[in-house]
Length: 464
Image (cartoon, rainbow, N blue to C red; front, side):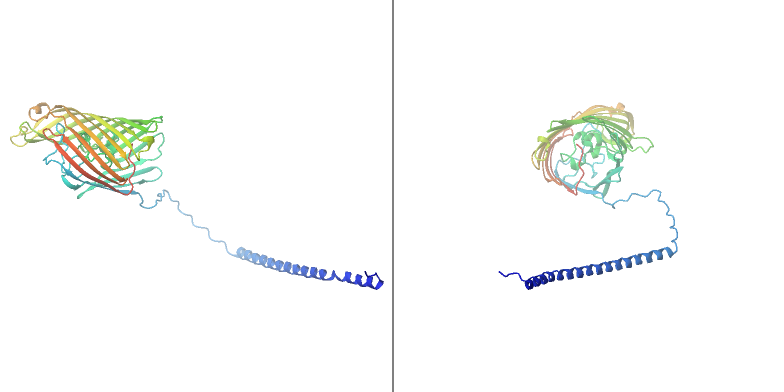
């Protein structure tokens, strides 16, 4: 060990005092750098403030801008839409039909439905062999937040017919809906269905007898529907219109040509069953409604009926699908019954030598009825089979003094139909149908149909 000496102690003190000197020098350098940074920031802010003050002085010195000219208010601006962008679909239909060659098809005992038997729009009669049925072009869209609309055009060779063109209210409240334009009446069950939605290739005999060549009743007018706030489905409807279609005629008046009332009741039974029943009434007026008859000698004569036609329709449908899933299997039972009464005057005219030679006027009173029942079963996805039976009763046909001139057929028209169809998608259906048609007295016509129905574009769902 070194012994402390005065010389060594002095040296140690000198060394100890010498160590803090570098730290003090570093602090001075850092403080100097901070002071420089503050000075730079102060200078930058002072420059920024000077610039803002200069811009403010320039704005205050500039002249005030002229007052903006008032803009004329737009009284009723039209709602802006997204252009012409409705839902559009095109239905293609065609078939091969093998049937008897009969000059003028009709339903015995009922006013001729073949008045325009060669009409391409007719859904009751038609051509033999290969042919296309009419095609349907459908547009539909919401017009605004208060209305929706639909137009359905039926196209055939050289002809375009407006089947439907209507607007309908949205959100009217209290269960009320108003429809205006040309529309299929809400009477019956099948009347609102377009031909491509039928379960068979042709319409039932009942609809052909009731409504003629189109096998459905459409009207130009107004329709009011009310759905009651009840646990079950309960709907009431009323219609007024021009009444130009069979069984009425276009009378070219300011008044109402036809009116209809109907009520529908329906609901569910468990999760697998649903049903609907309805009662409808149609009152139409006809003036010079033209038809063909045979006189007692077998010669063709022409008649004109003027009067009223009243019809009552009772309809019902029952559907079954396991747990409500109709994709795999379902069964649909459907039937309708009608009574029709017509009263008025009948004018009969015929060529020389016929019973109506020179014209014979008489009273006219008929009471007729009929029904059909059908079942359609989808036994596996995409495949269905169906059975339908039609039967009509010509009932009472009182032609007054013309009873001695006109032939009245004592025949109950009836028909049995079988069908099977395959629908690989919701847009395509191929159908095979066979029918034993005995709707004409003395004729048994075994008919074979091959039909296709194709939809280009999505088509709106149909009612229950």
